[in-house]
Structure formats: structure tokens, C-alpha cells
Amino acid sequence: MKILVCITHVPDTTSKIAFTENNTQFDKTGVQYIIGPYDDYALARAVELKEQTSGSITVLNVGEAETEPTLRKALAIGADDAIRINAAPKDSYYVANQISAIAKEGQYDLILMGRESIDFNNGVVHGMVGELLGIPSLSPIMTLEIDGTTAKMTREIEGGKESLEAQLPLVLGCQEPIAEWKIPNMRGIMTARSKPLQVIDPSDDSTRTLLKAYEQPAAKGAVKMIDADNVAELVNLLKNEAKVI
Amino acid sequence: MSTLAFIEISEGEIKKTSLEAVSFAAGMDTAVTAIAFGQATEEALQKAGAAGATKILHVSDTAYNEGNIQAYATAIAQAAEQESADTVILANSSLGDPVAARLSIKMEASLASNVIELPDTTNGFTVKRSIYTGKAFANVDMTEGKRILGIKKNATTLKEDGGPATIETFTPTSQENDFKVKILSQEKATGDVLLPEADIVVSGGRGLKGPENWGMIEDLAKSLGAATGCSKPVSDMDWRPHHEHVGQTGIKVAPSLYIAVGISGAIQHLAGVNGSKYIVVINKDEEAPFFKAADYGIVGDAFEVVPKLTEAIKAING
Ligand SMILES: Cc1cc2nc3c(=O)[nH]c(=O)nc-3n(C[C@H](O)[C@H](O)[C@H](O)COP(=O)(O)OP(=O)(O)OC[C@H]3O[C@@H](n4cnc5c(N)ncnc54)[C@H](O)[C@@H]3O)c2cc1C
Image 1 (cartoon, protein in one colour):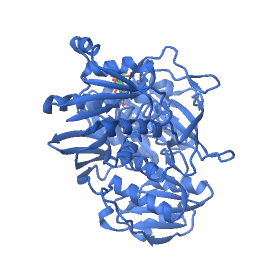
Image 2: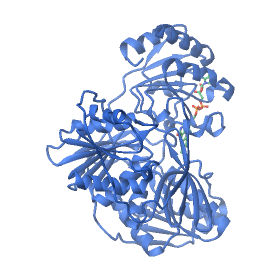
Image 3: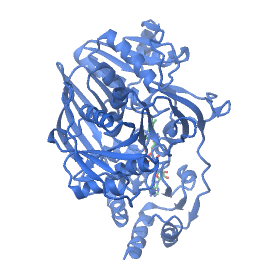
Image 4: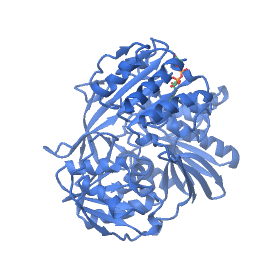
């Protein structure tokens, strides 16, 4: 089975979010970058599937040279080779176009990625890729089992889940608990250095949105502390001040 | 030109988030048509009229009952074409998001999700959307002539004074691949208030010590007509089901009131609740980071404070 795993290169979940240049650039000062947490789940499940069925895992990232350590980490976790589309990701459509161009060429059985990136949170690249390729796309996927060319999945729905079945090839947006996150071991880190990492120019330059400016949320007012022996005061505030009960 | 709003039906009723999507569309001052799939009475569908739709397209073919992502995208694209709609509005949801993605390719439309305000159309079509899991916003120009907006929960107030809408049956022409995915079954928590849509949420964290203590959280939730949630370690340890786990990697909620009991307020938990209008924190540690994000706080032992709070709420609700 040939698996393509698309990963994002995103600020660590604890990063402080700030902007520079008149709120048009993300401030990278002191920010640690990681594999997107949802993409990490996708990669972890791909590694498990490869162990069960043999085959190969290619990881793909649309990003400039600075994302290579993130791709190397994915190789250390268990991917066989990596592709970097040498471009800053401009919007979801732009990224989906790059991924589907690679996917068309590579004839993958399964294309896995996270349900959303934790920077732009659009949560739509998987669906766009599915539509561009003319194959089913499903998200958010919580479990995935493959038997031959049949995939059985559960997808989260509001307040529950649904069970689904489809034939490969498929595009899936993944989330927990699809797999246990994998931490690279020493051997993985050593072998990752010599695994192939191909750099390709973007195939298409079109976008459908244009970022004008970032904005910070308004500062939060100070918390009102209420004595533990006076819960009636809290009820009063919720009813008459906040008017939420 | 007109706007098409996709409304989701759950157990015969339009979901609140979908009524918000219709209200949002109505706020854009264009004619609003709504499209609904699945079984619903005329009376139930008319809620979309009250929310601002003047026409409702109802897909009553039972093949469309289940929420098949590809088939929905095909049908909505056809409806948009029929209505000459240049804008499609839907609620961000586990169905809305994947449908919107496919639809944007079919319609060659710009797409933005987590939109939190009406678009600014003074110079093009600019939307404000939530990014970095609620920690910032982006103002984005939608550069195509057609666009699709996913609306974040509670981003708009519900309109309820619209007139009755005309209801028409809509019969989509499905495409070859539309029903390739088989939906085998659905499992939904029933009876209770669903967490993603709840107006009040009461959540418990590791501070509750064990699943046997959740009765206290449920009682408080019941007194408020609230849904219950939890932090990630709580669902990881199977004290509570996964679909109650709130946060960056869990469900994102945006209720009017979020009450956090025995939750430290780690940044990943906050990322899932920072859209709440009011946050109440009950924690025995006065240094708990959650107090920084709270509107009201009580430093105290949950086992003492929560039962008292439940009683006080019951008292005012009679
Ligand atoms: C990539 C990533 C993603 C994550 N995603 C999420 C997510 O989506 N959601 C999430 O919740 N977490 C997430 N986490 C985990 C998160 O970092 C925290 O570990 C988690 O939120 C802590 O849960 P907690 O507050 O319940 O537990 P703890 O951190 O153990 O805090 C328990 C709190 O209870 C208080 N307490 C104890 N006893 C009492 C008592 N008797 N009365 C009152 N208060 C009491 C304590 O003072 C403490 O503040 C994620 C972590 C990572 C690395």
C-alpha cells in the first residue's frame, strides 16, 4: 500500500501568538515549530498500517527550507521518503492544488492528513484534495482499519460518531484517537538523515483568498473573584450581570 | 445575486448552528434561500423562514437522509446554480466543513471557515476569521466572484422575526461517485444537551479525582440545562467518553457560559473554550492559570463548592 501523509509545520501549541510589520507577518521570535498535532496522528496511523501491510509512506509538506527539520522528524518517526514543495503555503486552495498534483503522479492508495492545521484552522484541505482528485474524502476520522482495498472508519459527528466504509483510494482528515503518537527513537533519527528528501517547485500558483491583516483579540478584563462561602453571589452575577442563566 | 444557506437537520429539527447560518446570511442583505436535506415537517423547516430565509429548498429523497459528504456537495452546487447564488453560508460543523471543502472546488469559489463577523463589502469582500485556535484573527479577502463561508458557533445572534418562507422540493442529480462511501451506522448521545451546540457547558478536569465523582458535575449541568465536558486527561483515562473532551485536540465549544471545575487551564484546553462568552473557574489552587482567562472565579474545593452552587441555582430556578 502506498500512503501519502501531508504534514503541516506549525508553531508549538503553547506558542505566544504575535504579529509584526503592521500586523501582516507572524512573529516567529522564540517560536518552536512542530508537526501539526492532527497530522502527527495521521502519520502515526500510517506507520502502524505499514507495519501491518508493508508498503511505503511518503510525507509531503508545502513549505520553504525552514520546514525541513519537521520533515526529517516525520522520516525519523517512520516515513520512507519526503517531498517538500518549495513554497510558502498561501491558502488552503493553493496547498490542496500542490498536494493533488503530487498525488496524481504518485498514485497513492491512501492520502492521510490532520483534520485541520492549528495555525489557520480552515480544516478543508482534505476535502479540496478529494474533490480535485475525484475520490472520496472524509473527516474528522477517529479510527481506520484497512482490509485489502476496503477501508472501515469512524467519523466524529456532533455528540457521537458514525461508522463508514469505502474503497481505496481515499483522502482522510485524521484526529485522535486514530493512533498513539510516535516518538522518534535513536535509530529512526539516524536513518532519517539518509532518507531521500525531494524538493519540487510548486505546480500551480493560483489562490482564492488573500490575507490582508492579522488581529489580536481584545485584552480580557480582570477576573472577579468570589468567596467560596458565597456561591449565591456567583449565581447573582451570572443572572443579573452576565445574564447567562 | 443571492445567498444560499445550508441547513442541517437533526432528529427532525434544524440545528441551532444552522439557524445561525441563516441569520448570518440574512444579515448580509441579500435574498436568502436555504437548502435542507432529510426528513422534517413543514413547521420545523419554517424556523429557517423565521431566521431570514425567503425560500427553502427541501431535498426529501431518502437517499440524502444520512449526510453523505460528496452527495451533499453535489446537490448544494446544483442548488446554488439554480438560484444564481454567488455566496453559500454554512455552519462550521463535522458535516459543514468537509462539505464546504468539496463544494468550493465544484463552484470555483473562495472559502473561509470560522468566520466571526459579517463581511465587509466596501472594497471587495473581506471576512474576519478566527485563527491559531482562537488566539488571533485574520482579515481575508475572498478574491473569487463566488464564495463559501463557514460560520463559527455563536458568531451571530439568532434572528427569529422573519416571515414564512416558500418551501419547494429540490431534486438533485447525483453524480457517479456521490454515494461511494457507505454510512453503516450512527451513534449519538441522546436525550442530553449536545456539547458542541450547548449554550451552557459544565466541564470537569483531573481535579475531580475519578469517574465516580461525575454525578456532581451532572447535577450542576442538569440544574442549568447544560451539556457536560471534560479535559483531555479525563477522556484519556476513560473517566468520560471521548466526545466530551474539550480543547485544541478535542471539541471546540463557544457557549454563553463555560464552567470549569478542577481544570488547570492549560493552553491547549483554553484553545477549545476561548470562544465562550463568560467563563467561570472553580479550582482549589489560586495560582491555576485558568483564572487568568476567567470572568468569575472561586478558589475552593470542588467537592464543597459544586453541590452548594447546584443548590443555589435550583433555588432561583424554583
Ligand atoms: C498537543 C497537545 C494537545 C492537547 N490538547 C488538549 C485538549 O484538547 N484538551 C485538554 O483539556 N488538554 C489538552 N492537552 C493537555 C493539557 O496540556 C493539559 O495536560 C490538560 O488540559 C490538563 O487537564 P486538567 O486541567 O484536567 O488536569 P491537571 O492539569 O492535572 O489539573 C487539575 C486541576 O484540578 C485542580 N484541583 C485538584 N483537586 C481539586 C479540587 N478538589 N477542587 C478543585 N480543584 C481541584 C488542581 O488545582 C489543578 O488545577 C493537550 C496537550 C498537548 C501536548
